Amino acid sequence: MSTVTSTMPQTAAGPPSAVPNPVRADVVVENRIIVPGWVNTLAEYRRWAETDDYPQTGWVSYLDGKIWVDPNLEEFFTHNRVKQAFNYMFGSLFEREPVADFVPDRMLLVNTIANLSTEPDGLFYLWDTMRSGRLGLVPGKKTGYMQLEGTPDGVLEIVSDGSVTKDLDHLRNLYWKAQFPEYWVVDARGDAIRFDIFRHAEEGYEPTLAQDGWLRSEVLGHSFRVERKSDPLGRPKFVVHVKP
Image (tube, rainbow, N blue to C red):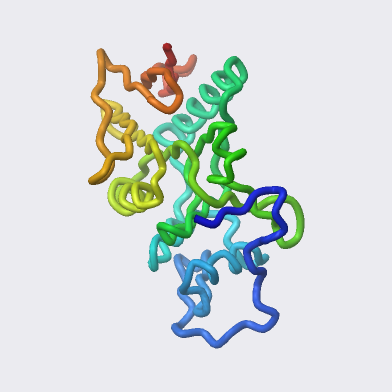
């Protein structure tokens, strides 16, 4: 697998100097997101992502030949607050035990083996994974680093009404094909929280068996549990607990 690190000069090709002939009509989603007709392959999607025309709101992914668009905003309690809890947990954990790094959402993740480009709700990688070249930073066309390419050690997706099929079917299959060691999935929309840590196995992802409500990450060497609590206004908030 070819990956790109910060020490390598390669980058995803920038937008074409002249827009190529489209092979289909532009697709307009809710009059907010336009998918150009020339974007059909992973390479073309990556070029588009480097342009000013790429959507700044909503969620757009390239999933093995399909362009998946979710124009909806995040729901506050069942998505945004869940994500906030994981951001806080991972930040605190890796501050105490600096063996890995956590990357929050809005970072494009590319894996050419799975023909995939998407923005997970979060991902983490061990420092040795980046050192080995299995995961690398891709220099942006204009500035800085705008994409990660390769294989992180774990990805996090929080299920929303518009992402059920994508998270539980398409991404589960593609993340397995990309050989991501762990796939973390949280669904807090119902009365009971669904929290899974799927482990990469020969025939697909296998769920981790819970022990008294705790799920163990073999990558991180800790067990985790998600709890729904109430804030001072009596509204839902979430805490992610960690133990050795």
